[in-house]
Length: 220
Ligand SMILES: *Cc1c(COP(=O)(O)O)cnc(C)c1O
Image (cartoon, rainbow, N blue to C red; front, side, top):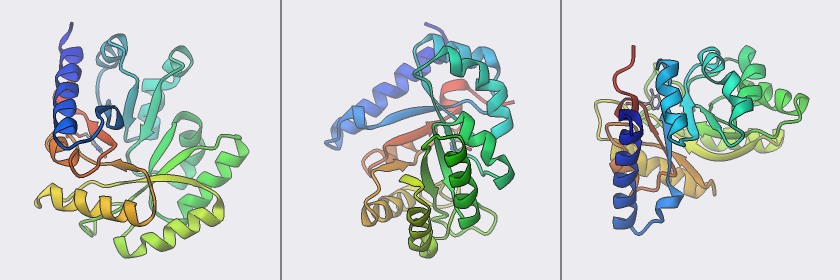
């Protein structure tokens, strides 16, 4: 087993442990390998080990990483976890299985239009700026009901919420808040937790944890 495969196995063991401790089924928590800014060899090692769920934060880089793999690995699942510009909605809908970063009406409009055009009922999550940080993308918590309504009107398939907590605050507060919001709106998926804090996200209901450096090592 190479290092990357070992890291994935080790993290999976931790996930199973925390899941069991919080009376959750380990199968309800999905480990997403965040492959942004990683060499193709590293991605290949994860694929060779059987890993199939990956996250990328830029559309163009994701195309370089994944366009050819898409046809080869039928069971591959790709999530977009970085901000999306409306003029890239076309490429994003084509490449990804899930867009986790829906955060404004204009983007709902652009993604819906592409989903119809490509006849691809793409799954989406809404990114919530739980820390209300001015520089961070994501909808403000108070604007979430309006955005969910907007997505329902457009018939965009929203199935979850995603957040990136502020670095200078305890992540657990934000995870709990996101879980509460998802519960209020009957959304089953919760994308939260990264290399440094995924253990905390598990008892609070994470269904997708996004792990980069703890799997692949430090990025370029
Ligand atoms: C890069 C990134 C991650 C992974 O971060 P690590 O700390 O390397 O695990 C998770 N989520 C998002 C949105 C990211 O951009």
